[in-house]
Structure formats: C-alpha cells, structure tokens
Image 1 (cartoon, chains in turn orange, red):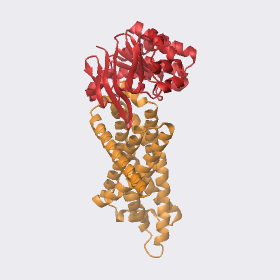
Image 2 (cartoon, each protein chain N blue to C red):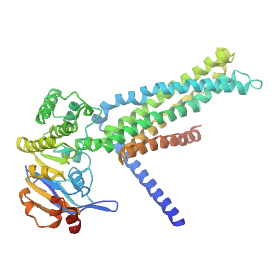
Image 3 (cartoon, chains in turn green, yellow):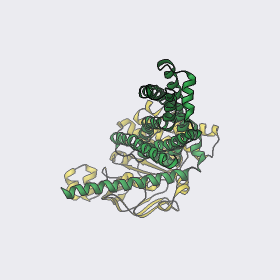
Amino acid sequence: MLASSLQAIGRTAIRGVGAVGQGGHLAVGAVRALRKVDIWGPLFVPQLAAVGVASVPIALFIAAFTGIVLAIQASYTFTGTVPLYFVGALVGKTIILELGPVLTGLALAGRVGANIAAELGTMRVTEQIDALESLAYDPVAYLVVPRVGAGLVMFPVVVGMSMAVGIAAGWITSLFLLDLSTPQFVRGLRLFFEPYDVQFALIKAASFGITVTGVGAFFGYTCSGGAAGVGRSTTRAVVGASMLILVLDAFWAAALL
Amino acid sequence: MSIRLDRVVKTFGDLTVLDGFSLDVAEEGITTIIGPSGSGKSTTLKLVIGLIQPDEGEVWVDEVRVDELEGDDLYDLRRKVGFVFQFAALFDSMTIGQNVAMGLHRAGELSAGEIEERVRESLALVDLDGVQEKYPSELSGGMRKRAGVARAVALRPRYLLYDEPTTGLDPITVTMIDRLILRMRDELGVTSLVITHDLDSAYRISDHLAMLHKGRIRWEGPPDDIQAVDDPVVRGFITGEPELWEDAS
C-alpha cells in the first residue's frame, strides 16, 4: 500500500517535472521564433480578431452584470451605516483592481484557452503539425507566437473595455434602482480613484493574456492520444490557466500594491 | 548519394522500435519497406526528415547528416523532401489550393502568379483539376490522399516519402495511388521511400523491397525475389500465416 502510494507520487512528480521541462522548451522556442516575422507576421492580425475581438461580447456581458450586482450589494451593505455615494467607490475600486481583470481572465481561459488547446491538439493528433514541419515551417512560429502575442495585446484591451462597461453598469443601476444621482456616484468613484490602479489592472491583464494563450498552446501542442487526448488537453488548459490566473493575481497584488 | 540510415537505434520509453536498422535507398527508384503494424516503419520516415532524432546511428540525405541538423538547416533540408502522410494531414482550415501552396509560399522562390500556376500543375499531376477552392472535408479519402501528394510534390522535391499511402482505400483508389507513385518517379524523377503493409501495392510499385522485423531489415531485394525466400519470418508475413509468423518470430 505504502509502496504503491510512493510509486504514484513518484510518477506524478516525474510527469510534473517533465511537463515543466516541455513548457520551458516551448517557451524558449517561442522566444527564438520571434525573429521569424515572415511566418507569424501574416497570422498576427487574424489572431488579434480571434483572441480579442471575438471575446468582447462575453467579457462585456460578465462585466455588465458584475457592475449591477456590485452596486446593489454595496447599497445593501452601506445603507444606514455608510453614505451611499460610497457605492461609486466600491464599484470602481473593485472592478478596476480585481473583478474586471480576474473575471475576464477566467472567462477567456474558457473561451480562448480551450479553443487554442482544442485546435492545436487536433492538429497534433492528425499530424498537421508534422505536416507544417515537413513544409519547412517552424510550427512554434506559425501556431504559438501569433496566439500568445495576440493574448498579450488584446487581453488588456478587452479588460479595459470590461472595466468601463462594469462601472457604467454600476452607475446606471445606481441611477435607476438605488436613488443615487450621477454626481453622487461620480463623487464616490473619484474618492479613492488612483490612475495607477488602471495601470495595475492592465499589467495583470497582459500577464493573464500570456498565461491563457500560452497554457492553451502548451497543452494543445504537446497533445497525444487521439480524440480523448484532445479532450484531456482542453480540460487541462482551462483548469491550468484558471489556477495560474489566481496565483498571478495574488502575486501582482503582493508585488505591485 | 541518396537516403541512408546506418545502424539506427530508436526507443520510445521501454520500447525499442529500431535496433541497429540500416538501409540504402537507391536514386530515382522506389524503395518500399514492408512489415507488420508497430514495427517502426513510420518512425523510419520521421527520422529521414528529422521530425524525430535517433538514439544511436546516423541518418543521411544526400551528403547531409540529418540527425545532426538543427533549426533552419533542418528546414532547408525538408524543402528537398516531400512527405505524404498516412491520412494526408491536410490543413482543414484551408482550401486545397492553399494547402498545396503552403510550401511554395514558405520557399519564397516563386511569384504569386507562378505559385498559382504551380498549384494548378501539381493538382493536375494527381488528376485533381478544379478542386482548388474546396476544403479537405469536401473530398473523399482517396482525393485527400492525392491532394496530399500534390502538396508534397509542389516544391518539386528530390525525394518523396509515403507513409502507408493505400491504407483504408478501396481497390480502385489503391490502383490509382499506385499509378500515381509510379508517375512521380517516371515524370518527376523523384526517389521514393514508401512504407506499407499492403503487399499487393508493394509488389506493383517497388524497385526494391525491404522487410522490417524487430527493428532491423530482415530481408531486402527485388520484389520478384521475395516469393522464393525460405526465411519463415518473411514467408509467414507475405503469406499471412500467423502460426508460421509467430513460431519463427
């Protein structure tokens, strides 16, 4: 019993070390492939659309409802104890510092990370990645670099839009449901606002973009085992990216605040 | 000099797939490796274009040692070697025309008009005129294989590697693919290395036949000679007699 448990732990540890090694190898390959602009350059703009533009509706949907709920919950908490214009402060601060980047990141881990893992995984198991290599394409430059680059550029854009929509939703909710005027909401919003908060949120968003696309690309690129393998890779990509987003969230809070 | 594998050893985990495997591929001929599934045939082809590296031994294409190449040198070599994948491995998000043009765009030697013309020529060579705008999912299995051949020959490579080119096809399509492989040799003068376990196809197309068994070449020679071989392993395989094969193995 003890021996089999130790064996299982050992196997898991070896797999983990192997995955870290593979991930490092892929990351180094991606950095080296940056100079192959002739390969990834033409694919970059389509990936900006696939990773960023196509993610806008789900990101804004989440942001809008987060803003509504935050405003209502803040009002519920503050009534009778704290002036209601603090609703604007709570909505603004919470959405900019935390919920805008993190909820958008988690949603896009599902949408973008899963998509990349499934697409690259299918290409791997159907030998399309081998075919790319046989045609003298560096598959990392062709498949990984444009996707991760698009994540780095577009996540801050999408998160920025989410923050704006979330705050706007909180403001509209305050106007129509909480008997708060626009000047009151804006007063609260400006009370604790620091421009640095936006910078902090966009740095987090960029790191989430690299994480979600990079983890998706890693699990897709190293996929094996047919359709079941593609399913496993997709699940691992979403779970892995979501966990890393939360770890990074804590890291940035400790490092930058 | 053509393609040469010299005392190659390749293992995957605990499994030794190639164990001192050596083979010389004759210029402008068709060499076919036969052997049961899982005997290392596909591994051999992937070694030739450097998709995987041997644990021991040497792999040569022309005067270049493939197993020592890295990066752009390896990609340069691959322009000389066309690879026809078992299930075609066409890029399913692209049209057939875009698939065939992929290698040409990468090579960067032809203008857009010349690429278009070369795509048309390559598809005509495999009797697939007029399918440029179709997607792989709109073609039959045999047509996809032929499109895979068109993509491999578009760069006019010196060598063509075929991975199980007739597997899963009906007899008529098998004959068409066999004729296509012969036509690539006769019209383009390419040196071909084919792996298959389709013996009828192997007899029809091969100039030289080699049988792979337990990671090494067990027998090689002209296809007409194989029927006279006494080795029970070879006889068991070509007659399809499991008892003879298993006893001898």
